[in-house]
Amino acid sequence: MYAVRRWSVRRARLFERWYDIVEPALIACHPLWRMLGYARLERPFAFAERWVKGFLFDCQMCGDCVLSSTGMACPMNCPKQLRNGPCGGVRDDGNCEVLPGMRCVWVEAAEGAARMRDGLQKIRVVQAPVDSRLRGRSAWLRVAREHGKQRAQSPVTATTES
Ligand code: SF4
Image 1 (cartoon, rainbow, N blue to C red):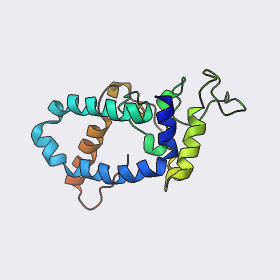
Image 2 (cartoon, protein in one colour):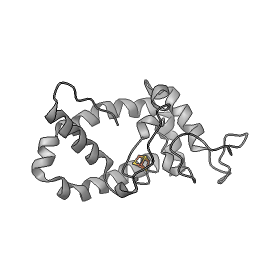
Image 3 (cartoon, rainbow, N blue to C red):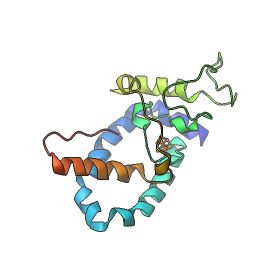
């Protein structure tokens, strides 16, 4: 919902703090997820993620989440699905050239990033093209699996990001 996603961007710092707690907890549970079976968990995780992030961020379930690098504004809501900043068509009022009634996702992203602790550094990082093979899958579970594996292999050097 448009109003809720704008509300979420205004609270980007709060969500950053929330991710700071939830992400390490998800990764720490890697042995449990592995025991239960990642394949078996995919559907319930994706279902929960679709509802939670769909409500808060209008998540489109790309499966390759970059919210923490985009000021908590989902770039998949850009009609052109740009993941590295705005096109040249942002209107003078900050709205989208394709959808004139909608604020440009990247104007929102810049405002959200400015509210976050690391937002202005992270928003400058160039994002890889979205991997369409991940569409519809849980980004939470993928982060838990990938970072959990890294941590198991290298407990001292493993780092996290979302
Ligand atoms: S970046 Fe992808 S996973 Fe993250 S909120 Fe947007 S559509 Fe959902």
